[in-house]
Length: 327
Image (cartoon, rainbow, N blue to C red; front, top):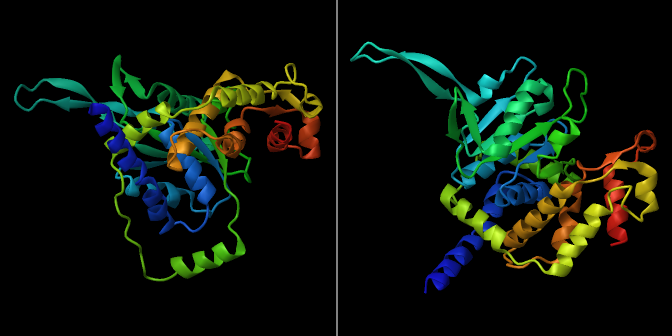
């Protein structure tokens, strides 16, 4: 009976996911792939790096999603003078009015929210970047010998601007690997851009309904790991990930243009994201299309192209497409 009740509960939650996407679409015109990928990262309990030129509604997209999920949201503007304490929090000296004794109290920083937008992460020094990445991995913060758990669910969406490179601190490859997905935003189509002009320059402001709570999203994260994936698809994922490595692959393209390929974490990420996409599409089993749809955001930041490739304008996306064609 408990199993039947649990199944019914999960099905009711999964049925709300199309409503969630529709609610976000009230505010965000287009960018459906990016919205889906952010929700996949959330369902898979991971974090994502969002890259796009200014003005593509990155902040609005994340804030709208947080409202529809009834989850706390904080935006941190990363700058060259930002310190770890500015995002994690710091201790302040307080006084007990009854006893007169003074004591230190930990004052939580903006990192303590369900959804944190780390805006322009590549503008802050490595010391501050490292503090954020530690919180992403551990889902907790240690300060003054005390451990403070971060909220659950916990999602960091870091953004970076691909245009300006002066005065930036690019994330090292090992730290990029900590992000579950690397999402690239493109310009809207002509029709979508016209819709943006129509809907954002008047007085109307759509109301965002609360579709899911934080506890319901935590339940969906548990469900994601229970989604079935066939052994033959696991073999395909393993083959794909291993074929990105020049020393393991039979692909002449990879041998010619890639310096090194994705590690085992990439395979884990692709499995989890494929399961999350299945849930988002109201399925309880992974299909090949889930793997193909997520190969790019999962692998693009985990493959290093050589200098010749960069000079020729050949990116990791080209290598991934080549490998998918032969899969």
